[in-house]
Image (cartoon, rainbow, N blue to C red):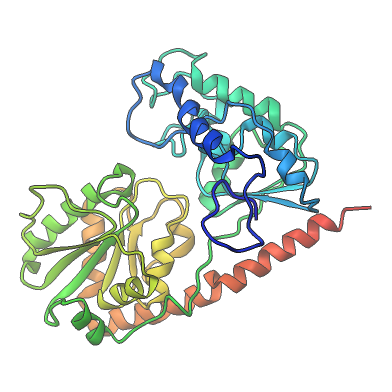
Length: 383
């Protein structure tokens, strides 16, 4: 494994060998976004450009691989042109939209990536030849003719790849993220509630993600509106909202129901017990390539409510292992929450089906076997 920064003493993991790698890597991260300073960029998505040349391919070639599997290229670690210099088959796992956009990692609904970007709404640009167009064309020129195999993590993301103009002849295979279902497993819900200090006589609605309440794409504003609806329909004294991964903004306390913030959790066992303590997980994201918290919750026997959009449509079976709400209807989201928690027998059945689906489709060994199959397919073409 070749990484931008190594934190362990694992001998199978290495950084690029040149002496000043960490310094130059940090500088690249800062310099990479400099061209954005000429625009009044919105906060709808994280951006990286990858315009600065580097020769990470030399460090790759030192390992003499048969296949190079790329997971992340942003922050100055691997430039757009560096991929082109790798003389081996490249498998690239796509976890967002950056590979086929002019720089954004999520498009916030814009589909200009299908026609070479330009006039980018996130850059507040009306210029067809703006930075997003130039970066899109750079990618097109650099990656044309590569021995490249794309692995988007959801059918939705695969559909975006097919609509883009960058990868018309590139093989695409959907392989989801995986989890350790031995770590993320159901715990006794009564004991888990007690461990987290949650009341046994309330239903608990869980919301969380990295920067859960700060990233507009994660849909916390939809969660707030849905909770208001629950309060107005008689659930005030029967439910509590639990938030992890971020702190609710000031003034959000008056939702009509109690709200508990547990902050960021670094321990997977504690997170698994939190999933088990709650009766439903809600993921109201507006754009989600996959949604790992969905499969974590399901592996812990907790049904999930999400919008029927993006990656969650690959994960949740509507009214079997959870509920897919109409995008982006707050009424439908609230109805889905109620449907999952109003009947204890139904809630338990949903949780059981959710656990079974997580084991069947998203267990890490199952996902690893699918990658092994792809590797063998690629190597079978070799002389």
